[in-house]
Length: 142
Image (tube, rainbow, N blue to C red; front, side, top):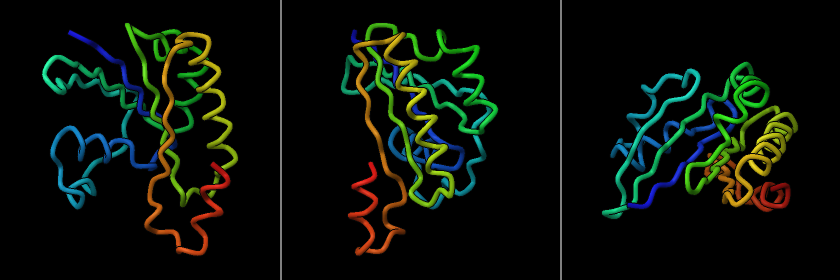
């Protein structure tokens, strides 16, 4: 059986838990409005495609949690089991994109130290809220 650790990280309110709920728990998009903010780290184990087990770590994105992950929990959060994937979610509506990017950079550094073979994916969430003429500008930044 193959196991993968999947870290879902990003700013609070970026949509990490909503995406997790839609993809892995069959939520309907409108039902995600009832989800509250993630406190600390929520763990879920999902069997996928028969013999693949995903260990989902949905990391709360509030500033205090992000600071804690990077300061005192770095080894625990960013250490892999056999393989590790970081999915970092950016909220296109964020008013603090520079700060979000700094956290992303810090997460990358911690991941390189603890899981050098990890794969990294960035998701730009809520692009449907950006007008067509501004979408290329958002893509260039990322």
